Length: 542
Image 1 (cartoon, rainbow, N blue to C red):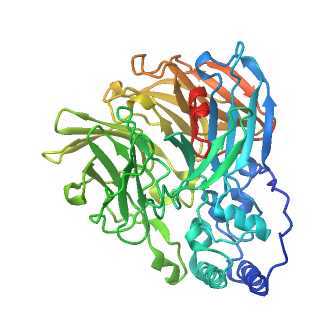
Image 2 (tube, rainbow, N blue to C red):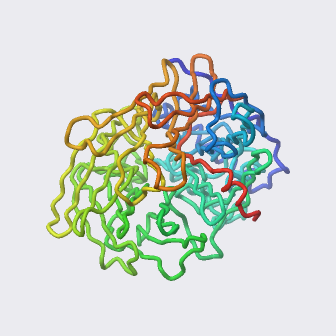
Image 3 (cartoon, helix red, strand yellow):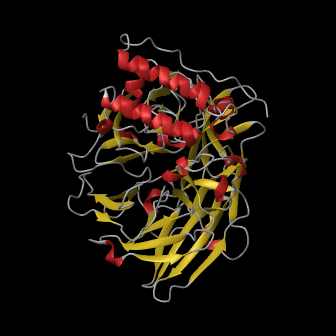
């Protein structure tokens, strides 16, 4: 596959001459990069490969007009905005670099609010001003080691020692966080948050006037939230509450918590999950009306592997582990009510939805990452098969049914059906992962009767997108579930042109309704959301 030379942001001058301690740490960084790192980096952390083609980072873009080149923006989307988060390293990595380790950048498209939907939209691309971003901006280069690429074998131990030296000499403050805020977004309590599970949420704000993005700061919810938060919180559409969790390498390895409908953290209602005996990567979860469902998968944290012969990574796969699903009452006060169910070979990275059927059955729909050992190192070899899992609470019986043979992930549903029985989902086609070559619509009601794909659109040769997002035409569940639009960014690697596309979610071919040509290349990313005009104007100023 041809590779495009990465286009990196221009280096910024250091804000001041480095102190003697800082200069020593910089010299040690170079020593590690040149003499301790292996001479031939693994493809998963080789910047020449990881940051090629449309994964190459771009500079920030101030609000810039974008013409609608096809169709018109539907009335229900006008004045709203699609915002997608993703990794975009601020500087050329000095050593190994994993795709997950880029600084968070928000690519936000504000749609026209007036007229017939043919007026220009406005694109704005801004970094999330995390502590890490600001620290490295002032330092003039990378400073903090990253989890997926910075801690591996002897070089990882050496980088950890240099980081400790920076802390001891006052060059960095670990209490300020080291997260990237590069994974997803959430909107609740009148605030928009950029999320990355290794740190606290960062509050950001979109200007209703021109669509510019401003970072307001790292948010600990009045000192009540510590350490980190999942990048995939769930909003209960009936109560407006937000359910979330954090995970980490020290006990308790998983902690569950929630926010009320006003976005206030529910103090004293955290539930540490002590029955999770080993730290594992818990990237997503699901809720029903009465329960929260947590995956315990075969990707685990093994810090001691860094000092093992040959040097390993602190995060890796354990093929001998049997995956489990943990079911906890949604308003539990302790983990005494948590029940674990073994689900051999079921590795959940992203959940589509879950619901209850009667008093005894929970249904979960999610992509199952089949080749989990490649999830971090060789993502192009990953195949995800969407499954419907039925759990009988009394008997413990579990049944599983595949819904499609295609490689599908990065899926969404109508937000009004979260935790309730629903019928449709929209997913990206891995070709290969993490590139998305098209969108598929699944109909869960066809489960057990063959392939459940009922609508499909491919982007064309050399064209790839990301996670689709479903925007309902109406804001209530009184409408048909699939009455709405699927939106996302698509990039053409042949002519380096990026577009924003809107598809009719009800049509058999997911027909194109409108296209917006973007003024600059929008790199591939991770997860996004759509804010309505009312949500944008309702944002809190601070």
